[in-house]
Length: 99
Image 1 (cartoon, rainbow, N blue to C red):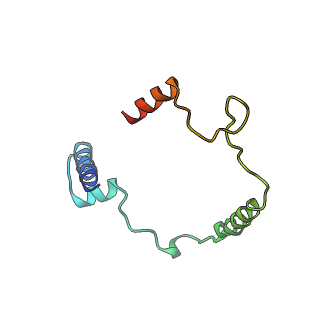
Image 2: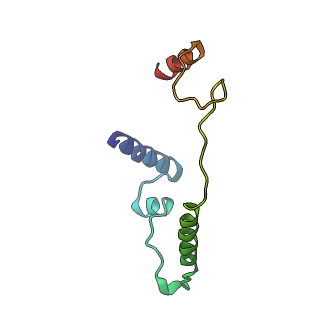
Image 3: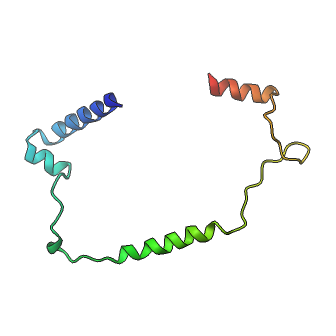
């Protein structure tokens, strides 16, 4: 995971350098949007988004009481299949998936 983060950081530096022709902190900060958030007094605050939270909580609670169940897949004879069938087609799929 660390190698991936280092690779991403290196790639970002290369791309910013090629695009902006400099790696000055002021330029990098503007290109990557690394600015401080605006002060609350700069814009009006609206708390309406919190009205969604009770609606979502109630919807999930009501969803628990719905009689909904996913039926198991039916086998060739119409009954639910409870085991993996190892026919030729299944072996090919498993061999391809497992390498």
